[in-house]
Amino acid sequence: MEVVEALENTDIKDRENAEEYVNRLYKLVQARNPNEAEFHQAVKEVLDSLVPVLVKNPVYINQAVLDRIVEPERMISFRVPWVDDNGTIQVNRGFRVQFNSAIGPFKGGLRFHPTVNASIIKFLGFEQIFKNSLTGQPIGGGKGGSDFDPKGKSDMEIMRFCQSFMTELSKHIGPDIDVPAGDIGVGAREIGYMFGQYKKLKGAFEAGVLTGKGIGYGGSLGRKEATGYGLVYFVEEMLQSKGLSFNGSTVVVSGSGNVSIYAIEKAMQLGAKVVACSDSSGYIYDRNGINLDTVKRLKETESKRIAEYVNVHPEALYHEGCTGIWSIPCDIALPSATQNELDKIAAERLVSNGVKAVGEGANMPSTQGAVDYFMEHSVLFGPAKAANAGGVAVSALEMAQNSARVAWTKEEVDSKLQAIMKDIYTKSMQAAEEYGMAGNFVAGANIAGFKKVADAMLEQGVI
Ligand SMILES: NC(=O)C1=CN([C@@H]2O[C@H](COP(=O)(O)OP(=O)(O)OC[C@H]3O[C@@H](n4cnc5c(N)ncnc54)[C@H](O)[C@@H]3O)[C@@H](O)[C@H]2O)C=CC1
Ligand SMILES: O=C(O)CCC(=O)C(=O)O
Image (cartoon, rainbow, N blue to C red; front, side, top):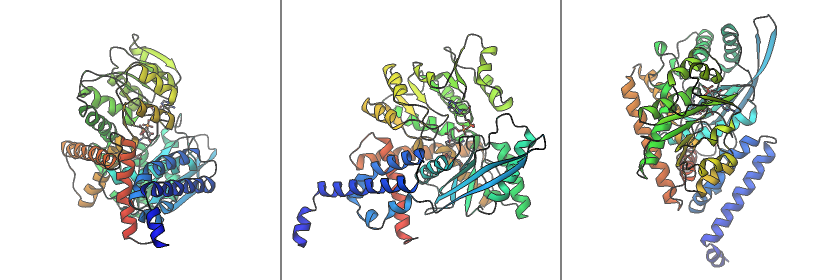
């Protein structure tokens, strides 16, 4: 009997077993998390790319590593009551998912946006596990946020909301437990209000409890720029492997928030012409290259719509709607706004216009159909987990500076960021090659990110 089993134990059989296991697990995730389409999408991509790893390492199946990794260690949801400027009581819902702490305290941003729900928070938290692992820094995966809409709120309303949000969240976080940061709708202002409230509640200055802080009270130089700069560093690595470069190329960047602005800045510094960016209402197209100072003033200082850009630069065009931006001819596309903003139709347009590289600044901005289409057409494709990991990587550097009570220069932080992005590129490339998928950075990033976490979980026993 043992001999027969051994004979049957061919590669094909192992692959079938692994595929069957992954399919069964995916169905379980769907059943356990009904109506959470974004979470299902993120899990499916990771599970599918791990099949060859499971074939080579059945211990991950035997020890139920994946069964454990798709289930958050903890997920909290809580009431956030606050009083608006008219004296009316408003109630929002807050979330924090503490997904995996195998390699360090939970780490990941907070998103304030009306679309936030359990599915969005879980997809983001799940991806954060692998992204954070790829950075090489000692950080686990987490994410949080609220369905609060900051748009149109006064500064005092934002402050009262942040204070109420932190009043509950403070019970669950700490420098060695869980370290939140910013994401959509959460920047230095919101982090400041939350840090102030945490400090008041704890009666202690625990600098490492949040990252993305103001420079004057424990923030790191270079954190604001890190996600966008890191994205460009990663894409430049991909381009150089094919003898290409940002220099002299035409670039389209969606969004005009934190990630987009600093991706545009670095792309321009490397000699690219960035011709378009957007917000949730529409996009601008400036064929001679957009003026970043105007975008920064409109978005960072005045919180205005991107549509106003054409009032300052009448030669530029403004179009309503978000998807049209992908019809603009470009060499490099950097989707940096939100999830599923770039679908297969958009991918077809980009490819027919000759796009050479796509780097995901946002989390999961490309639908699976779009990703498959880029791969089939040999477009260099940098997935979010690898390409936008520079932000959380510098957050980990902020934690390191806070622990050591030191402050590095902007140049020191930037050179560490460049080294980290190069390392992520190399790790992802090598993992893809090792498992027979050379050039597939989606699989490579998932595999390299997974293995470090999975091995730590094995070493720590069934917890
Ligand atoms: N801030 C960070 O360090 C990191 C952010 N990310 C991801 O990058 C993306 C952008 O985040 P941030 O720049 O921090 O947020 P942000 O709040 O600074 O900016 C978001 C931008 O996207 C625009 N936007 C929202 N929905 C849109 C749509 N449907 N079409 C076009 N534009 C739209 C908004 O108008 C805004 O300009 C998110 O997916 C976030 O999860 C990823 C890694 C780190
Ligand atoms: O810096 C952080 O911890 C947050 C980064 C983040 O949320 C992300 O990588 O998506």
